[in-house]
Length: 250
Image 1 (cartoon, rainbow, N blue to C red):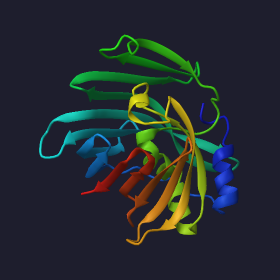
Image 2 (image 1 turned 120 degrees about the vertical axis):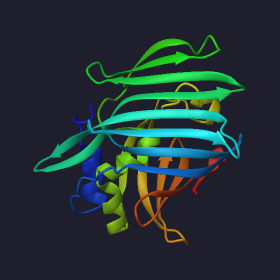
Image 3 (image 1 turned 60 degrees about the vertical axis):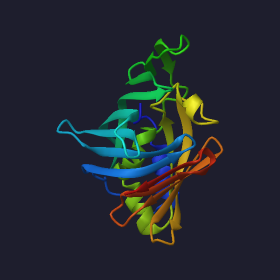
């Protein structure tokens, strides 16, 4: 599915970042963030890394400040693959499966997404207190060509291609991605203007912040998210102003 059309990666290599980036590596990383959105203030317990099976995982828990009450839980897994562009090889992530749980008014909502590459579909299993959000859905890819990435794995997606390092080195660059929303269909209730399960997007280098962080912009659905990376290329801050969302490292 992902290998069919390397055009999006070729585009940023030829136009934005002259020179071929080296395949990035996803090291095990754990950090807590202060997380705020329109519903309140939380602590985000975040973990990502690479398994022995060469799969990249992301774990995400949203808990209350000063308590261990859980409001949201996520696990996303992607396999590590390659794109071949002539004599070069670029690392990519291939989304495989995600499980997402959120509590609305003390009731549990669950969504599992599996990508079936051979059929070019998403299988979405939903369990919730509402009749409209239960059962199994099969959703075809409207366009199965390009680079796909789970929303909560965007940082690792741009790292493994080598794009993040190359854009910082050259101080310019942009990369096209098709986002898969792990929280589908519940994201419709959480984020205005996001219907899911897919969103086309562009991830681009914007410059340096006053703190010296490397700033990138994710443009999707007429909205903008700002990602701030430190010198070790780890995420320090994330802002989604139109949704009232901020995420800052502790």
